[in-house]
View (tube, helix red, strand yellow):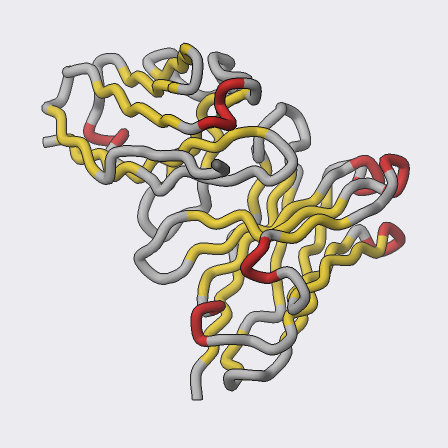
Length: 120
Length: 105
């Protein structure tokens, strides 16, 4: 069974940092382009970034609202993607999902999400 | 512009056809995807490549596109289809539309 499991969410003060993890199983992780999508309470989906497979360059792209504050990385030996979040703002409060276009040209595999709350 | 525009809400009766439009410049040369999200659940891909349906998605779900407008159609809408639906332009930025809350009653 293909599965993505996020972890690392929690409560953090504004200006603080947090690192999220997304562990994959049941898929060939080295080939997967991995994405982060977030959803603020009561709001819609927001794509925040993606990291390509190493064979496709391994580069990461980030959306404008998080560029310069967030970093995406991957450890293929652990089948895990990371989201390092620095200089957190209250507006970063959201459920963070990891997701990948694995079987189809669309985000067809999603994790259950991890909750990040930025509050003083 | 990177924005994708959807109506915020749509209400249909069971058995009727629901059509949700998504418009944006990026749809002119990028494929559209559609996602269904029920409360407290992760999104589910229901349409990719403008018109293609992943395995397991009921045939009553279909997609179409003309120019810069993509449409998700649900024929014979069921109460279980009540959910939020998001469009997406499949490209480097993967921007989502604002979402449409479909109510079936």
